[in-house]
Every structure is written in C-alpha cells, then in structure tokens.
Amino acid sequence: MTFRLRAARVDDLEPLYEMAKLTGGGFTNLPADRASLGGKLERAEAAFARTDDALADEQFVLVLENSETGDVRGTCQLMTQVGQRWPFYSYRKNTLTQQSQELQRTVRADLLSLVTDLEGSCEVGGLFLHPNERAGGLGLLLARSRYLFIRMHRQRFADRILAELRGIIDERGGSPFWDGVAGRFFGMTFQEADYFNAINGNQFIADLMPKHPVYVAMLDDDARDVIGMPHPTGRAAMRMLENEGFRFDGYVDIFDGGPTMTARTDDVKSIRDARPGRVTDANLDIGERAIIATGTLGDFRAAYGMRDFGPDGTVAIDRKAAAALGVGDGDEVWSVAR
Image (tube, rainbow, N blue to C red):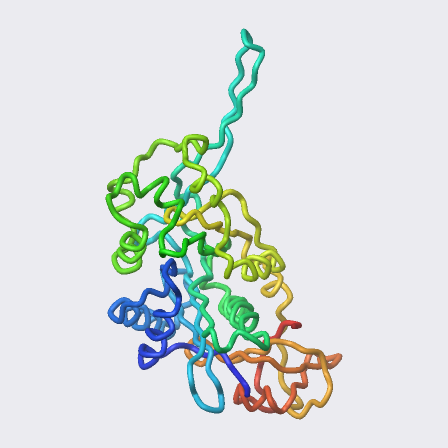
C-alpha cells in the first residue's frame, strides 16, 4: 500500500473525529468534538485558499491517506504564528539562587513561572497516526512532511518553531501535574480543563491562574516528577524532534507539564536540507530513499520515494512515488533524504 500526505478538506471531518476519539485525551489540537474539528478544517480551508504570502495567524491541517483506497489514517497540523488570538502560555522552569553570608549557605530553588515567551512562534502539532498503521515509518512521514510544507511556503511561517509534547497522564485520564498545580485554583479536573481549552481557548488561564512563580519544592512528588516528561507514547516523537534540531529549554505545558521543544525554523534539519528539482525521469529504479513533496497550499502532496539528482539540479524519481504524487516530467518537487 502507498500512503501520501495531502491537504485536509472539510469532508475529512468524520475520519478526523473517529481518530480524535482514539487519542485518550490530552491532545488539545485534536479534540473529540465535531464542531471544534469542523472549525479547524474551515480555518485550514481559508488558509489554503489565501494566496498572499504575508505572515498571518493561520492553521493548516494535513491528512495521511491510503492512495489506493482513499482512507484517512493520520493527521498533523501547522500553526503559522501562535498567540495572536489569545496569549500562548507556558511555564518556564528556572532556578533562583540565594545566599546567606551569615550561614555561609547557598540555596537554589527551582521555579515555574507563567510566561508568554513563545508567542509569535510557528508550531507543528496535532500529529496522530491510527493505531493500526503504526508501522512502516508512517509516523516519520507525517512528521517530516510538515517541514517540507514549511520550506515550500517559508514566508508564511515565523522564524522560531515549537512543538508541544503531551505530558504524563495516568490510567484514570488525569494529570499529576494539573492536580498538583493549576487544578488547585480552578476547581476543574484535567480532562474538563483540557477539553474546555481545546474548544474555547485558554483565556480562562489568564483570568484565573496565579501570576506568581510556583516553587517546585512545594509540589507533591507526583507533580514534581512529571515536569518536562513526555507521555510514553510521545518518546519516539521527542527523539524525532531532537534529530531535527529541536531542544527542550525549560518550557512546559501549563496543563500536563509536558515538554515544549523549540528551534530556529531555518535550522530544522528537514527544512535546511530540503532541495527542489524539476523532474526529468519518473521511472527511476534505484536511488536515494527520500520524502518527496509537490504542489502549493491546497494542492500539497508528500510521499516516500526514491530520488537521484542530476548535475544540473534536475531529479529522477521512482514510478510509485510519481503515481502517488501525480507528477511527471517537467513538474517541480521538493525532497529531503529519508
């Protein structure tokens, strides 16, 4: 079977909703709510339709499709500039050092400070692959195709990029971090707060969250131990982000304490190494394994394939990838080595 990534359409609502029900909670960008998902698809449709390349507050949704059956089996999202409709809050973990000359003692305390440092960054998120398809490198295709999309539409994305990883959620669907920090002020369970945030935004955080730093030492062990820890299912995603050049710099999610990874957009490996080329041969038999993409905005497609660059910058690709992407001689593609 051949899979390809393509721009999402409004009629992808039902498969997205079915996948959202499988996430197990904590996926703010993929809530199990038809109205919210429908709104995301409509917003993405408007973003795909806009031809002006100026940086704006936009959201793109991509889906992974079986090119033979048309079944949607995964999804991911890109946000061009976060924090424009409402503040983008994070906790930043830092250290306060205090010294007493009389006691000849130095004390260092870890603090969590509520910040909006990452406001204005672009974001990759909302990545979910159907459990029945978690083999064959499809998660990697989903993740890295996003960077090809950014490179092919670079002016529409900010110069700093972030990715939020889901934090630790217990067997009851609760969050030890939420219970130990914000939950004490809101009178809401983690699931209630996470769902409300996904549907309505996080302005309620600005309204009700204490603005003073939180001393980590004053939290219970369960909350303290999960700060900056990804959910077990997100560890592979964290490794992929690190391989792309993302780093954890002390920013954590205000709901579940999961790590927020950041990088300079142009330093992300798959963005930096992406190469364009005009197809001169769509029948390549042996070549370098790659992720290959083509199309602008709503016509974007990406798939695995093989490539071989000529000395003049033209490229040959294999027949299977050409068929999945709908390209032939003379068409432009972008690619990055797998």
